[in-house]
Length: 127
Image (cartoon, rainbow, N blue to C red; front, side, top):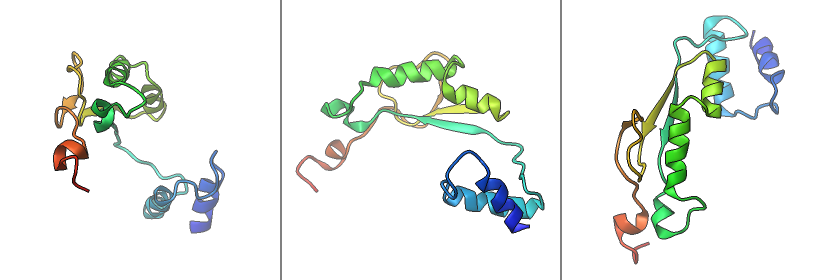
């Protein structure tokens, strides 16, 4: 059976073995379910939104407003992540784990507010 499972995974649109540990988990799940195309129900996609801690240091390529715009797009159902979740028939949950800007109306639950950098946390002169 394991050869059939591997053949199924290798036939997917990706390089053979490209998903690493995820493929090993898929094989274990398929073996447990005794089927080549393992099913995962119920399921949920979870996205974590945060700003890079280095935004305030002027190092990041994008300002934190980009995070706010992306979150608003996801909350409005217009992001690629929404389309992928819909295609997989799975709900999408967004969690704020460190966004620096104002909360988005109706936005994600917050695990924490703002972002932290090593410079602020441990002091600039410390390794």
